[in-house]
Image (cartoon, rainbow, N blue to C red; front, side, top):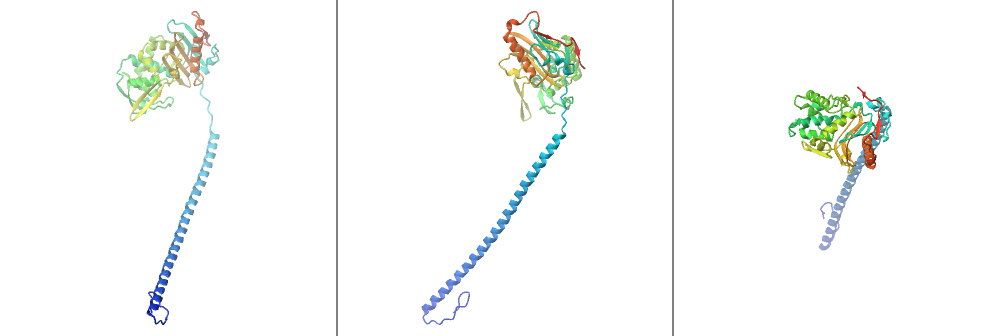
Length: 375
């Protein structure tokens, strides 16, 4: 009898039933053997796949370790490079101000002011409360923008006229930065606001550049206005204050503050706490450079700050203190917040000693030189 796959043993059986049983058993055995072979084959495939997976994982692990090692090496190299660079850095001392060079900081006063030049007067009576090197002629930095604002405001030019910031407005004097990129378009009113409140240099330069007649005419008019106001120690060469050749005295600047206070536009824009302008798809937020305008302790009617290394920290203000309208000028102050601290000292003293304010003599008089101009 022949099976499905192999020859069956030759067994002589008389009973047909026995033959069928034997044949069935043999067929079943063949099926079992076939299934076993398939299982073994499948098991073999599984082992092969497992080995392949293990090789892939091992390769990935090796790459990961290599990356980590490379990262650590890179960090070490970077640290070494930074250390080497640090060793090569040469510390350059800050440039002394003109006042420091002249020895004005050697002057002492009753208020321990950090400003080498100071003047505080009563706006109404012209009484001098504090004077310290008030005739010294020094760079005035962005206090310059107050005169820029005076000319633009008095010219009655259309404040909604659009002005484009150009390459000519970029600072080549000090290399200062600005968020008003070349091509920015703002109205004259917006530029004036930014110049007075945030001391934006490109805004101030653009105002002078686009003045009828051009920048040269504008600067000439700045000097003519100063002369007309009796500010004979004052000189301007540009409208931003970036040049150290823009110079004045505390006495002259007190005159300018008193005059500018009469312009409602200048009062409003210079004391604005913050301002936003739309530049393309962006909204630029600017804050006032004088933190005192946000203080509840102060009632400021007009103000302007300034700084370049040659001028030191500068501040001019009109403020109401203890019921009196005062004009304050602080020039060549040492330290970022020292001009603010000087103003605070004066305010607290006036508020705590109103009866001591003499109508005949200033509270403090310090002057190293009756007249000093530094070029």
